[in-house]
Image 1 (spheres, rainbow, N blue to C red):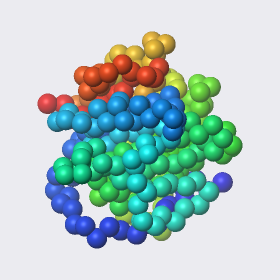
Image 2: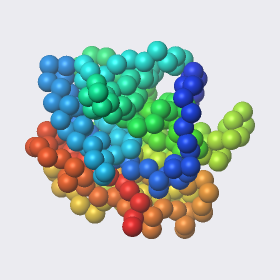
Image 3: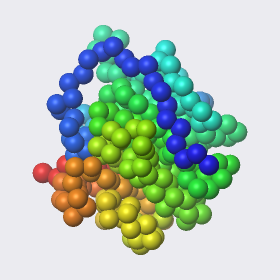
Image 4: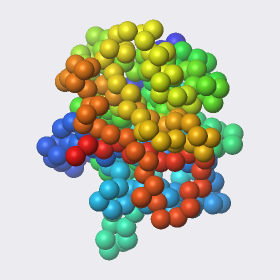
Length: 283
């Protein structure tokens, strides 16, 4: 199976300053499993997701699992994304008003063509330079791929591992690692740092132990997880795996990026069995 289907994009003509986003720790990253959303009831997007993106502590990049349907106010862009078997669509979404717009980009992959519930999305304040799809070793009919976007030399993936104990998580991480370390046709990828963020459906200590069977991966990545449960079951299921291309493992972002529940951003009742988690620079 081909692990990666790189998505070629037509670049936006707008110019951005990359000085403010030089390292993974310069981004405020968050993740949340919405537990589905329907076109009839958009409150999870229009209320909860909007709150996670708002204010000084709002996320720059939000990974969404079980994204359901996008809000009707999200507008499909004319940007051309050539894709393989897994589509990624780009939308703009105005969090502000017509007179005072506050635009974000949504990268949306409708994986659940039946119930339209367990889809993946990434909401970003910056338009992506490139998009990636990375598959696990499991059947595409069973396992969801990782969906990623690149901003400068930083890549951010959203993942939703299998509910049966996250059995596809190890091969997903391995194949993402290989994408950026063993790509002769794209040697520049070795210089990309990346984060894999989402619902792994297994405890971080469990995944860390399993990754020791992949020493090349485990020696060059680090797991960043909150100490509090991220699921109503009392388990920690939502966290991040990070690879900083510029630092050896012992100097990875354990001391620079911390994980915590993002409950202070929500001013309404959580409508999911997962709690949102943020990953920000420790100060």
